[in-house]
Image (cartoon, protein in one colour):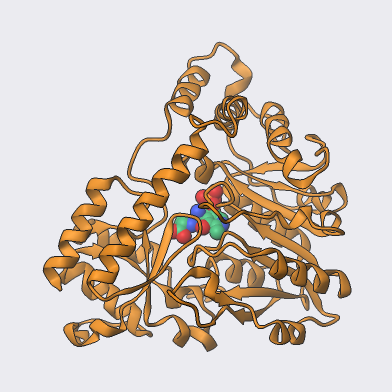
Length: 408
Ligand code: PMP
Ligand code: GLN
């Protein structure tokens, strides 16, 4: 017999990976680079795998490989204006996904409400429901601006006030934001912080794209704001910092009294050699931090050029882009092209699902439908939008541009 749990939904990631294998489109779908990680990470991995240190192949400290937690403490202490204790205030996991899962499982119980901003990275919803909690959604709403920037999408503070109550246990904040590339500004963060403190709510700050913010925007860590260190767990990912999503190394940083729930619950650790290699990489990055040859700096600059290029292409074909301030994704409105699409051959609960499937098969570029990042009640808000991942080689983006232009 078939048991359908309430958080089991259609898995678009798997469906679209299968479509990519079958139709071989230019792949701007899932969020990963199509180029090699930086040399210093490849070198570190080679060094670690050929090491005579047998302990790099065996179980390591369950809360996090010592060399990695020490490197992370050095990397993050300045951004939260305090000394982070590597052994008490950091735990590493199999990716940010593992860190999110253990944070949510460790803190959310039956009856707890968790506030999630829409659109959201889809796993938040299923994790909260799997833990027995109830997600409460608040969509980012478009506020008129000169051009469509991600910063024009904002929270309605009154609407936000109305969501907090005595059952609210946690607020999930994703800044920089997937899929919009929005960097929440200080006013927005202070307002969320004020409500978290007023209602004694913890903040789960998913900041995996924090090193990929374009000038002049600046990422502010929620945990750095007054009164927020004590109630925030910050989530990071080496997959994002070092362009190696397959390695699955992530971390949760926060005060001991919050991390303790992550230690006693399910553990999803990463392998010691992966953690050692990332530790070596971070040590190298820290030595040249802020300099022109710092990897994060180079990556940010190259991503900004890639965004600008794709923004121009999308405007040319009249798919109005929401210009991101950070990250690896760009969202665009395809509604003006609707007449060119034959929807009859495609299934899907929302038009963007049908559009993207049709586009993969008949035109040849893979994009992700944005309605999957909304709750059932609000899916309509995403159905004119698609997400494109631009952390790809220039040749790949040019190929996509040619396909778009030819189609137009
Ligand atoms: N959070 C966000 C916002 C993401 O986009 C992703 C996907 N990369 C993750 C967490 C998961 O990161 P990881 O690959 O390290 O598990
Ligand atoms: N975070 C990536 C994305 O949004 C990967 C998705 C996933 O892990 N399923 O594309």
